[in-house]
Image (cartoon, rainbow, N blue to C red; front, side, top):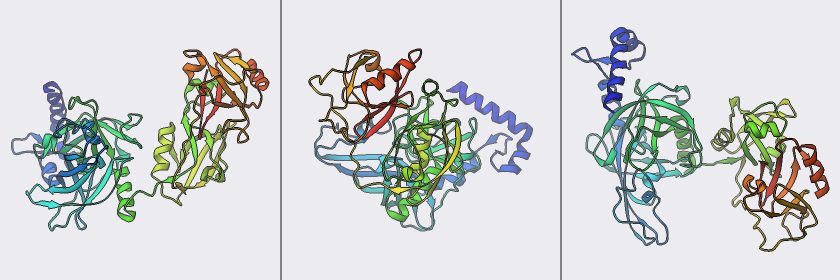
Length: 467
């Protein structure tokens, strides 16, 4: 850490020594103190009053485990141990004042989860009770409101303009010690697939983020908040890998929470998955990125727009889609009634479709086919360790879709490893529809020289697998 800090200081010193007047005039980001040394103190002094400490108290209900015990940011700070019984729960964190006139503060959902009382402490040591306006667990964003005069709000930047290598400052309340500032760079943007939140598009930074920083600000050198600190990798404190929610996402969620009290998240009505190079080759596609549509739900926004199974979504409203996560984030932040302009590749041609986002149903049944305890009829064909036959009349898929059913799969066989399970229904082989075991066998024979892509239905879900 000493070497890293020295290196960062050396870079700033060298840069400031040659260009400080010009840079300061252009951005106001770099300053020189009376000793002629570069400093960020004026920026920190300006934004610090907008960063608050948050303390909560509440009660975990019987049979409900407090998720903060598992949270790497707070697990070691909370008293007691999770035992499934009702018990007091406390947490500490940070927040960012983004609207001084109305007293709105952005923080993380997990900071205020299970809170009955929320107390905000300002840098001038005023303690204010806060009201929870609403929160969104899927993005880990919450909005609080306090009533006070002389609040100071921070300016919001544009997180879409961030580049890897940009200097950033993390401000928060680590370990409950009080406001702390750390310097680092943007290590990556658009991080997803971490399993931290439902919608992930994180800014990764090496600025030191520790327990208690959650909900604090990630700030640019010009003093604009460009992210809300939310998580660290691992449970041993800072190891140089921290994550922040982009401020553009956070403020979009905040606007909906203020307007509706919750997020009015819409639905496009498709199952999607990443288009990997291997899957693209098996499907005979010349592209290797985008979101592959594996199922279109009836009467959905996608079906009314004309989206089909096997389409590859390349962009939404002119924003490129590199994988399924990009599409999920883009649609997940759209409001009901908004129009999504979809750029799609179908059979090698680029087409554009308009989909009007629909509301989510009150309850979505995510059915799954349970493997039968006994083998069903075996007058089918064998492939890669799987036995394929006609759809069993007793199956919930009978009369609903056309295809062939997986009757049995040998454990650890290629079919098993690829993900096939008894009860699955295969509707396509290498983009060719199959309705009988003989058609399945013929389609497999045509692609005997390479890996084959199967389109699979399992309950309410659909996906492609590669064998």
